[in-house]
Amino acid sequence: MGKEIERKFLVIDESWRSMASRSVSIVQAYLSRRADAVVRLRIAGDRAFITIKGANRGIVRNEWEYPLPVTDARQMIEAGLPEGTVISKTRHYLLMPDSHLWEIDEFHGALSGLVVAEIELSDSAESFEKPPFIGREVSDDPRYYNSALAAASAPPQPTGF
Image (tube, rainbow, N blue to C red; front, side, top):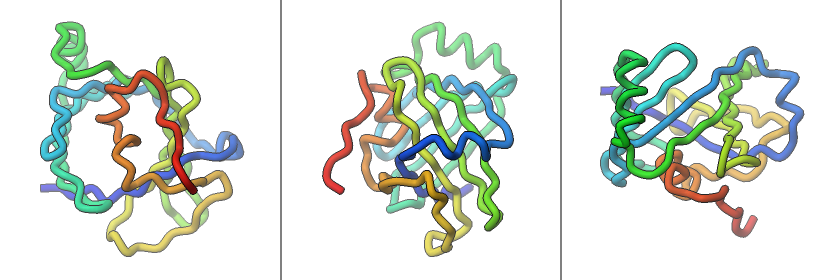
């Protein structure tokens, strides 16, 4: 069993663009969006995966991911199996001087304008430097979970700072 320990932040400017080392187009759909068991299909470039995620416990959750033939993933999406809509985004990768990898998700379609930064950690207490483009943390805001975004007709509106 794998563990995902991830923190998520809104992005406040575009200074990250010059730091990106690579980018990949992602299509993502959900077979289940229950709080206790999320099942996701993801096509990232020329690779596909099915991922099962357990309930969030703060920034930690169980996660299992398996490769899947891209044609199978496309057929499942085209057959209308996903709950909600399909998310389209571009993921940009930034390796920062402190050796942490940041993933910047730039959403498309109904979610255009939403840009979210994620950092995966090895421990929930692990420290890291926040780059200058990092804004408000939304790790605990379920409106910013990708599974919730799949059902959204527009980006969430930030509340209180």
